[in-house]
Length: 301
Image (cartoon, rainbow, N blue to C red; front, side, top):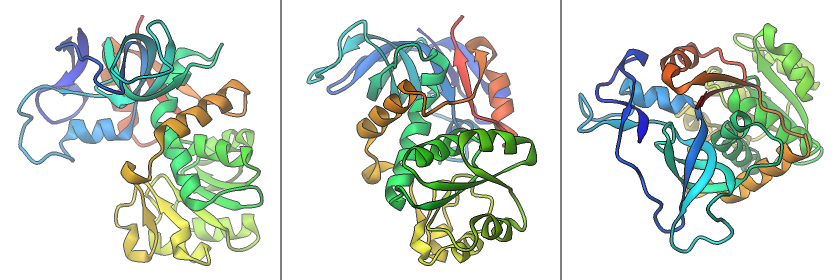
């Protein structure tokens, strides 16, 4: 099969859309013929070598952690999935012609392939953060970084639960945040004061998806520092905040089912920019800027 890959760490110029061995579904997995796959910040970190121990990879590295496609292989023990099903979900090496998913949900009828492809990582991460924070009806939540892929989904999931949401973004993205149901504030220096003004005081919970505001500042907005959860500031624990990277606190099947339900009834919309797989380097250059509205998605022609 063809897959996006690299053999040396660096920037988008290292990417190659070339041949790679076909993966196969193991126990509890499905394989899909990929229709679309999203690009996430972790892909850029992998490509740059920021997560590596060695100077160069021992073998070609495939990229991608979520995708949407048509099931063409079902692993042992899988129930409720069959060849021909249209699904989206999480896996690894998903920016390819074929990909194995570890967790998935049915593609909601009528939802574009690019949109559902963007929903795996963003949906799971948003659900996890809101669950850890106990966001429910009546909660006042601040999302620091509300216009990006995870942030925009988290805002909408929180609004769907009946929460009041304040979210930060550049001024250009304030209309988007209003459309999503949040009160927008400008990100950057002084954001704590702007959130205090918008919320009329402290907030109940903070979901930090950008990692730009010092955790020492964010904890001033809540009564209990543990009511700050970050997915991007791995040093936030020193200020009493919590950091989540998935693992034991992740419930992917539950999160993807919720995401599918919200997409199906129109309570969740994911803005996407699409790129052909052959032009994946352009998507990587865009996401590396750190100023992305919604999600970037690779699609097959």
